[in-house]
Length: 282
Length: 335
Image 1 (cartoon, each protein chain N blue to C red):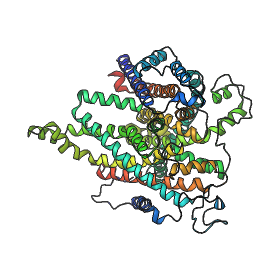
Image 2 (cartoon, rainbow over the protein chains, first blue to last red):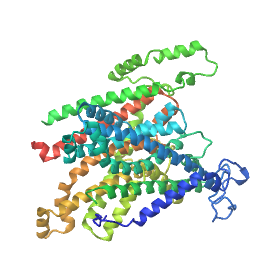
Image 3 (cartoon, chains in turn blue, brown):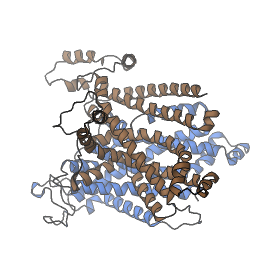
Image 4 (cartoon, rainbow over the protein chains, first blue to last red):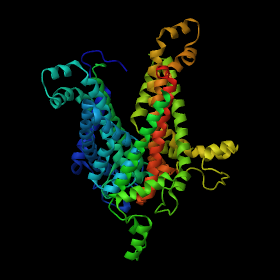
């Protein structure tokens, strides 16, 4: 990886591809009722397990084939994207708000606040995250809000740990001391001086977290604990595909490709943002 | 100095475990839905339900229940599973070896793959080989174990069906084992036919777990190696006429390994956390798979037991790594 010493770097093609894919998937999800070729819930046993368009036996209008109940795979993927993106944005922002706030307090004030918050983070890190998520959704009851809450409750520590460390570093800088001498209050300094300097890290983490949230949502719907079973989800389609893998491989392959592209795109963005904002690398 | 550090860490570890116990206890008891009503046939009377609630101690307050459970745990009694009607500790110990074997095989793979690519990358630094390793490790790192598992199922379960993608061992086999550590025991008993069957089942889930960790090891170790390779004493070795591979293996590796070693410890706990869903994916009969069933069946005592065992495993690994770091790091050793 080049160290990027040039003052203004051109956006890499990888970033263009990542952005292009996310934009495409997001637009398809937003306008799902307009762009989906079929009703994602319509079952037709005459059309069960149709192969994708390039294989013999495919039906026009069912581009990626159908599942064992004759439901159109492409339409289900498009509608599944709605849940994936809602969860990705809502859960990441919630985790970010909780984690960054606690990290900022912990890193800036230190003392007993830091000790308490760090102990809680230790406890959280001792849970297997996937099991914790499954447990929380089982407790809260399946549904979109449960999934979002569960992911936020588990992943706030990612933000907290990083922001705490960054805040500690920033607090030792001269500019913070100058602000103190100039007579600003502690909370004022934290919000006006320290926070803007850790925002780049927060944004980079947020992008990475969105990819993680998409995966966790897929895992939850894979074990049938996400939202109601009627609505198509990427993880739910994968679960169907895993069962009928020897009869209809496409039911597993297409959601898998969708998930991999989405996760890779989010992490590309996160990495690029990290490099762009990092004063050492820049 | 070292003992003091150890005792402090031990104390923090106990506090962490207590915290985990409190959190999981509170979380599963605010759950709606009565686990007792679920285990009885539809015709059960209120008296039946009340009797069973008392039997499982569910008629007491949450605080009372917690301390009853905790005093049991202190005596090694984790209670009785509601769905399987067996001793929780027995169930957990029955499944834990399968998960440990899977995690250890995955860890060994990750170290071998990550270590090899790091050494090759450091030797070929600045070439297309290094760039290729960087791209591969970047992809391996960004894609989580769940997705790797699915990719492997497609590749080696369907496209080229050479590995088993379901279960721990072929069901028709006669197993002569005395413990649940099937893989290790099959090697000790020289039953390599069974070892092969176990490996054929274990390889895919283990690779899925190993790939992200291998990528992290590869990236960090390569970075450390490249830094060390520019130091004077290494240059001196090179001048003495050793080949680049010899220089790396004889001189650079032992000085570059410490940061990677610490990282492996932390990442190993993430790997163990990943076994939960990967075991599910491959229908592998380990602790994680049982945990998901326990959650679906609302088996409170079993969930508590499993989560606590996972937490214990995590803090023990962290403790071990911390102590190893203290022993190996000269600055801490003499400090």
